[in-house]
Image (cartoon, rainbow, N blue to C red; front, side, top):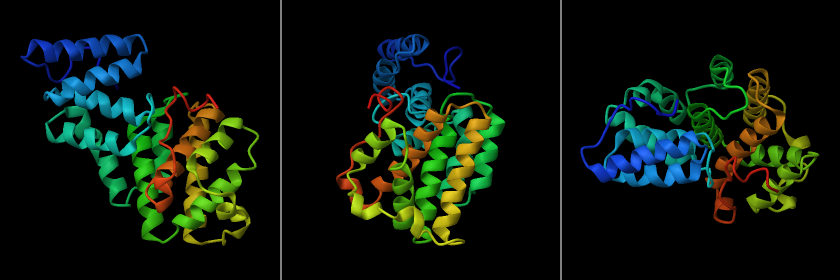
Length: 244
């Protein structure tokens, strides 16, 4: 959870602590962009609680751009500095980075969190990095992207089509990808895992829109690691994703 009271770390430098406290106040008012900016300044001066809060803000998609790698970097740094909450949850991200988390475990994580209509930062960071790792490990990246974008192209949700446009991937790349997927292939198992994650999020109380955004963001992260990432636009956070 974001740190509002009794943070793990306080700074002896008045200006640094003032930035952190102003960031906390901004969070309490739902001003995530302002909070992020203040926490960046405090974290740059060594404020560990600010660093941990950045991992949650960025990992939970509260600001644009939605950057899973920056969130993970903050998580690793906060844990290394001894932040107890960062240390206790880091294993999720470490397992994902090894490709050893598993789709079933991600779905169980969602249900255990009972987070409602939110994006759980450690879950989202772990899911995005896990699916990128296993897509590359099993040579399934192209087939997974083609399947996901082809399926998305049939959506009735305008913000999904806006997401497809932001990827910069031409239609001829993914057209027919839904039907080309071979049953039992690595790509088939990966997309099935994404289906399980979507269902689990819905069962945990997420709206269909938020669950779809989560899936788009995960695929967007996978795309960003390919040559197509050079022409795709940054991922959008909750503040902009639905403003198609």
